[in-house]
Amino acid sequence: GAVVSQHPSRVICKSGTSVKIECRSLDFQATTMFWYRQFPKQSLMLMATSNEGSKATYEQGVEKDKFLINHASLTLSTLTVTSAHPEDSSFYICSARKPTGTGTTGELFFGEGSRLTVL
Amino acid sequence: DAKTTQPTSMDCAEGRAANLPCNHSTISGNEYVYWYRQIHSQGPQYIIHGLKNNETNEMASLIITEDRKSSTLILPHATLRDTAVYYCIVSVGGSQGNLIFGKGTKLSVKP
Image 1 (spheres, one colour):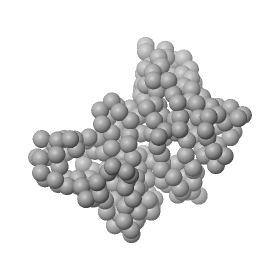
Image 2 (cartoon, chains in turn orange, blue; image 1 turned 135 degrees about the horizontal axis):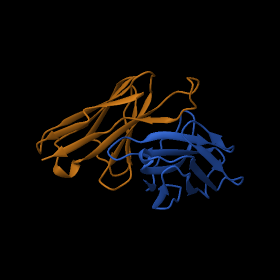
Image 3 (cartoon, helix red, strand yellow; image 1 turned 135 degrees about the vertical axis):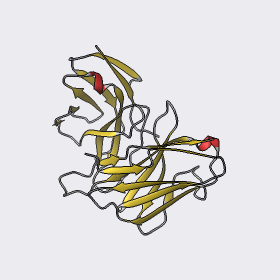
């Protein structure tokens, strides 16, 4: 079953509004989560690394004031797209690494993705 | 930039083995080879990973060359549901390191 869950799976919003996407690790604690963005027919692009209890680390070219990341607990990270524009329409995917020693060797698990459409 | 090179697309007949190659000639000694796949409009799914030795699980087998510069993912009996984009990624394993995705191989399993 899924070990990382995202919500909502689909969201449509008006231009200028803000949208929050949640990412939860279901049966493990994740001190680090990763947020990716994927445009149609393209590969996943890493946006930022979400660190529990500290500021997120953003990849070059990703606006931290536009894509707000909050990792308030060991099982929840949120991505808020602020003042959304149509060009922000994309598939947003989060991931978390299951700690070693829990029956895994640290592989990264991905959420189901959240498709954002900005009108 | 991704550190791997994969063919853009491949076809495979249903029921036959699918062999997906990946070149990673600049892999470092502490980097693992990971394979994920992404079915349309879903998040990537973990398949398998390895460091030096060949690995097998319920989904696939991973064959890594002795010099570790290339690997092959083998789906022993491909089904239509295995149609997906397959990503080969090299990364430091354990609790560190994110994954940098390349363009992957679009595998089409045909009846």
